[in-house]
Length: 427
Figure 1 (cartoon, one colour):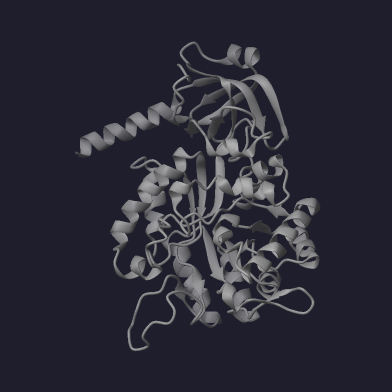
Figure 2: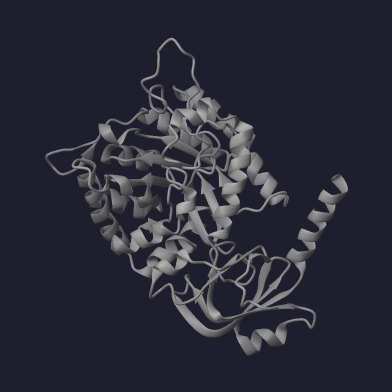
């Protein structure tokens, strides 16, 4: 068994290093905001070695390079989803408490490996997974297993355990005389929060996820039109979290629905705002100045659009999205997959971004170059630049004309290895 495993790892390594020459009917570069006809991409050792007109790139390819004909396809960088939960399958028939009480962490990790393969097949070559929902540090193990070639999946940037104040996360309303697990790591006070950040980083966290507010049902629109709520941590506690994380070289994501929570997160120096329904122009200007990313997670709220109260909250968010896109705020694709079923395809988020007022190019950039910037992977991911990871996808047609085409990815390459191939893509 060990010998077979080693053989598999060697084969994967060799396949990643073999030169590959791709002929693209159309090459779509989100960073440049343009697409060019009849282009070539040369891949060496898992990275882009050359890109440009087909005749020029083909002349640079070694004689033994494998050739892939995607001349009937648009080729573009692999997609990035910057807000996911791979430890949840999103089954609406499964109560949240069942994940904590009826499913072991090993079971959830095995299921997450299958979810990761699904995400990769959809064209998502990178995910930022924003906490395990009670599965402790299992996301780190999955990340390492994927990197080692033990299972297929996207590149993972993981957050391990979300941080929540006492009473600030699920499950709620349970019997007081039971010591039950929670979906996040509950910690209070400056010293305890610094210790919690250190423990997560020591276990392998790339990001620290914090619930700056909690329940949408606690939000209200005030007389000035702002979405208000209490936030869970004091300013000193939030500052301690970001200070400790940044000192250790990690970034911080803030779950923040309301104006108050977004304001508190920006003041504390968080690097991204998750959900963000309560933006106003002043907060957007601050986010732009600070370079803070925003993952709107529109798919997570689709069931609330017609709700008499929550629908009004979502209209505030839609207006803020249009304003943010015009200002150049760093809108980043994040679908909250796992809060709904993964099989429903997280790429639907891009269509919702366009429906909310972004151009197809802006939506695509949110899932490539903007997401790479948030992950501090500019030049490595979400780009066709020479030297970048050869994470590529292909679709039939032009996504800049129809963003929904990104829900029909039929070719996926990750790190120079083809993991999904359209039948017409011949060597």
